[in-house]
Image 1 (cartoon, rainbow, N blue to C red):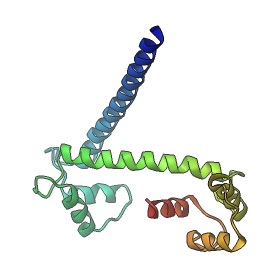
Image 2: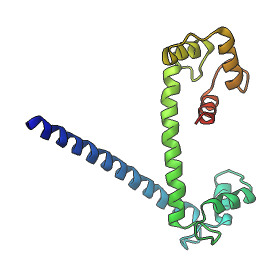
Image 3: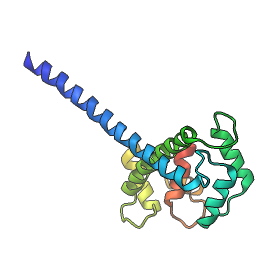
Length: 171
């Protein structure tokens, strides 16, 4: 009856909403790409060279090796001209945007585990999270083993950087 029509309508609205959000997000990324092109493309010829990247980074206090920049440019330089055009810059920005969204999701999980909000996960917070999310009681030896694997700086806590690094290893 009429409930079937409402369910179909609801699904259409949901799909349309997701498409609008994705479109808005892409437009934002496209805008960011125009801004980035304007920032790096010093001679305004529509192409960003290794030299232009290097100079702009230096201007903002970052010393980046030209060889590393060349390798980075080669990895996205689809037309092989040794420079980055708008389309190639858009590819970079979309990848960066996707990475930022993944990191936001990781940050939310990290914050849930960090019960006291001190920006680090203690042994007891890890133990509680593992029990809650794996439904398994972790032995002291297993907990110690996990901490040894994850706590790179050996301060007894898991920082967000350590947490994110380990999550990426298991992807």
